[in-house]
Image 1 (cartoon, rainbow, N blue to C red):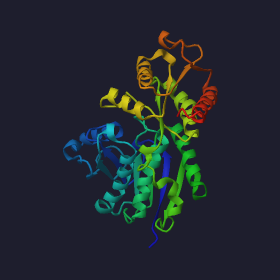
Image 2 (image 1 turned 90 degrees about the horizontal axis):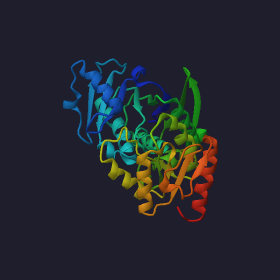
Image 3 (image 1 turned 180 degrees about the vertical axis):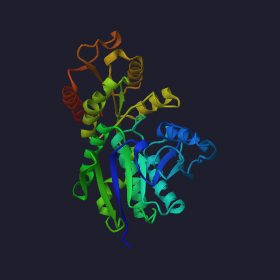
Length: 340
């Protein structure tokens, strides 16, 4: 039997999106979209906290809230602080498997992107999620009527960046189309067991992600720094086949200091943008220096360095493209010299 479904990366708002089922994680507390949805459901008398699943279990509820989904599936996961690439893959695979049993007539599943809001590498996080979907497809472990899985993201710039990542992986096995002014990436999955070679590049995502080298980025969390991070810093890191990670202290819920230490200790290098003289960034630089971690300092022209790093080499940049160019050269230099 040859079964197939479409996989889409779509720019959309979860509150106005239409699908049979919205899949959310329950990371033993409410965060982000699941907080919004559970609060919406509670207005209609559904107490999700009482019915939310423990780790490895799932709960399917009828949607009586304001969104357009028929049902909402909650997948119990580890806490957000421990929800990394492998856990994202497990989550996605579990979602399709659970719906095969709980709601086999599901035709359209919607998920949000996981990991991008709290510091994981956005490309690796998405690939891990897709790897979980492919795993379920390979095992024929998805609802019998399934036609489409939509991964939705409300940040248009992120969708465009990730479109390029997916296109580089799938090439002739993919197509980009314009659908209702929304760019949608479509991958056809058919007879996955006999065509496993099509997904060799991605199927290991999640399982092997923690073994990949990453650079830890320390920088202020300001909106005006978004392009600096995603285009000036993340792109050079990715071009050297390294993961780009940071800690978003606005969403992180655990011991931030402990997590910061762990991320720096396991990184091959640290990049620190000292623009705006953020004290947390200086703390991260100090810890990196203390353990002898290779560190690249950045600052936007016109900003001042604190006295304790004035004697250190610091790359000054005028704009995003300038930063991308000089940082690419510096990372490649460190790699060529065997420093990272």
